[in-house]
Image 1 (cartoon, rainbow over the protein chains, first blue to last red):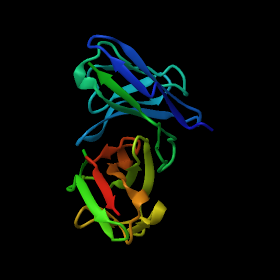
Image 2: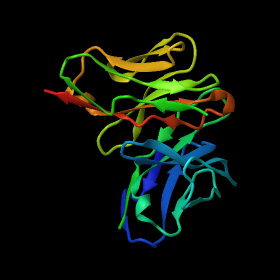
Image 3: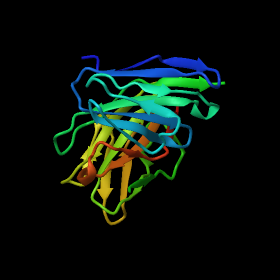
Length: 114
Length: 115
């Protein structure tokens, strides 16, 4: 199993550009989420999904869109990038249906918005 | 809602010395507690977790943590650190009764090992 994969690893955008950060998992996990990591602020939840066709907002959803058409994929879209969205983005997946299951994190995407 | 406080943003420690990274949490419901480690330019890796039962939990790489409910703390310890322990460490909490999928993270502690 590849686990959780993210592409691209690095990206530079200009203000106003759009892009999609890709996330895929091959563990058949129902639950997937997106976090952003900023210095001194830890990781903050952007959006999450409890299964295909179901998404919800996390702590910092503004400026980001998500969709979940398949169990495997959970892309994060920036419609009009802003410098405040410069960050490292992590995707995670987890298997639900039990009292506890471990979250698995992808390697991250480092995004710079100029 | 839950919150996590990591009081130390940076901790320098000499090699082979002991280390304690502090974590305090706030929650009105029962919680699961976690420590994650992030090595430079990598993703997060689970170090250890407390779900229930024994308050002393052991993790990978010789780390352990103790859950103290009265002090709402979950401090991470290692008796003798190595250069390879240089990393950022995150404490996190989830509320199992409300879905243990949402993790709330602390701001992180950067552990630097001095040779």
